[in-house]
Every structure is written in C-alpha cells, then in structure tokens.
Amino acid sequence: MNYALARSKYIHDHRVQVNDISDPHATILVVMQELNKNLRKIADPENRALDLREQFTKAFTAIYILETSLDFARGGEIAENLFRLYEYCRHQLLQAFASKQDNSLDSCVVMLDEIIQSWEAIKKKPGG
Image 1 (cartoon, rainbow, N blue to C red):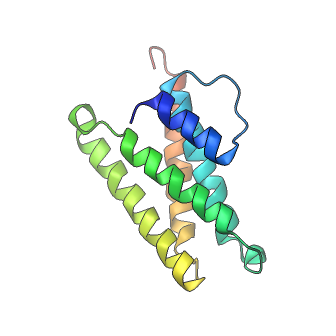
Image 2: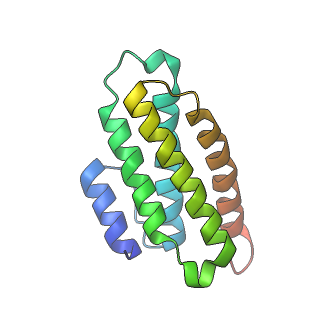
C-alpha cells in the first residue's frame, strides 16, 4: 500500500486532524502516534467502563497501515523485527478486546514510545 493511500484512508476513516503530510516519514510517525494514543486509552483502567470500540478500530487500522508499509526487501532485519512487534501488539489488542483485560498493552505502549523516539531522531539527522 503506498503512503498517500494509507494516509488518506486513515484520515477518511478516522478523521485524524493532520496538517499537510506529504512526507512518508511523517505519515508513519502520525500513524505510530495515533496507535500509541489509542493503546494508552484502551489500557487506562479509568476507561474500562467506557465504550472503546472506536479506539480498538483505530488501533487495528494503524497496525494494518504500519504492517503494510514495511519494505522487507530494503528494510531487512529491521522490517522483520518491526513486523513482529506490530503483530505482537495486534495479538495483545485482540486479547484485550476479547477478554477486557489489557495488562499486556502496557508493553506495547513502552515499545512504541521507544520506536517513536527513534523514528523522530532519524528525521532530525542530516540527510534523514
């Protein structure tokens, strides 16, 4: 899936408020941030009584976008490891949705925090 299509689908389906994002790097950053935001909301014990279907839908959509945007030919081991991470989070999200227990989502949030920081650092490097 190309970045423009992924961006437009996500914005259309979930009404994400983003300014002009024509850079694929920025698009992936926004999707990772949205995923992290929704995982945090789902994992927050104070939100257990709320209807979180929208957050689950947004999180699953973000994972799909991130997985389909990986370039395994050029990304090699990094792409494979990111895919494993996204699959782990998808699996934990499925368990949280089915059982209403979301203890394992915290580990996804921590890992995504680290990836987001690294992703932001890549862009700040000269030539990044």
